[in-house]
Amino acid sequence: MAAGEVGARGARRLLLQPRLILFGDSITEFSFQENGWGASLAHRLARKCDVLNRGFSGYNTRWAKIVLPRLIHKDSSAENTLAVTVFFGANDSALKDLNPKQHVPLDEYADNLKSMIQHLKSVDIAEDKIILVTPPPLHETGWGKECIAKGEKLNRLNATTGEYAKACVKIARDCGTEVVDLWTLMQKNNQDFSCYLSDGLHLSGEGNNFLANQLWSVLERRTSALPLLLPYWRDVDHLHPEASLLESPHE
Image 1 (cartoon, rainbow, N blue to C red):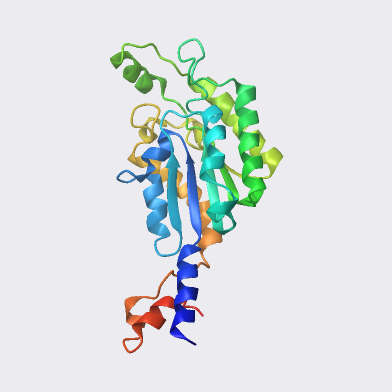
Image 2 (spheres, rainbow, N blue to C red; image 1 turned 180 degrees about the vertical axis):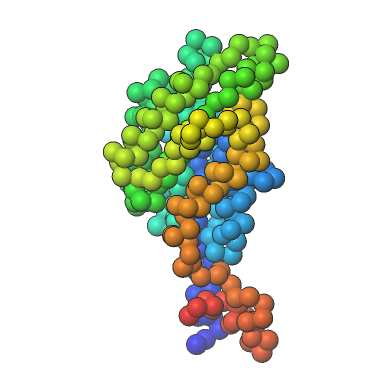
């Protein structure tokens, strides 16, 4: 095989490496911080899959629906996307009277999730590659302290967040996508979930680990057969390093 042909095949393989896209609000944006859930997934998928952080602090589904087509479209190698997490609701569920800018009515929230699923399907990302994540439960005491420090009143309630989580689960079932019901899982058996949250709203180190494990239970079966992007150093042919590095280690 000519060196140029080998190089072309290798370059294309690098370009078309599988990828996991994390789309969401601040809980996603912060996921690549130390001990974050996104960083954990990236570590587990190192040299097999690119993990892309597309989190936008403060965003709700109204704004997410607008920006999604700019982020994922047919010209962005959507066919090579392993999965997309869609993780919104913590801002949508803000109380209308106290946080009208971020608040999104429940029915609109559900419609926005449907719209985003439809867009992903339109660029050939099938339902089984879409993973909805509900907002986590809200610890009102913890978040209330944050609000008071800013001179504000408590602008979210756990019961209200729960209604958005239920809507998210229903949309996933209706549309045939995967779902991680974080709101329910973190409160299973009426356990104290405050340890999962750093400020009553965002995830703590323990919460990040919890979410990473929940997502990994969905992703592991899809990624277990992925080959390494390039061979281990011991497998590199010292006589022909260029060709051996560009060839798939499993070809």
